[in-house]
Length: 53
Image (cartoon, rainbow, N blue to C red):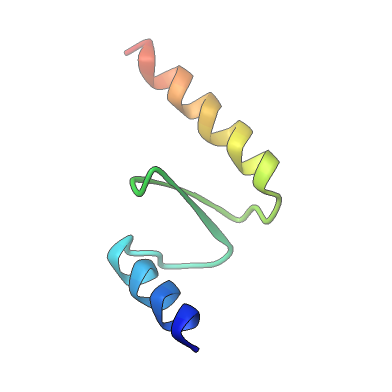
């Protein structure tokens, strides 16, 4: 029960507004993906695209 409460508090801190959601570095969120490896690829791709700006 304690872990569930911690998860709820973190979701509120990250302003998670829908599920599924995977949070990276406490800053970026990938929504709609349940596969951690797929979400990691999406996150890394977005990070690379952001470096070019």
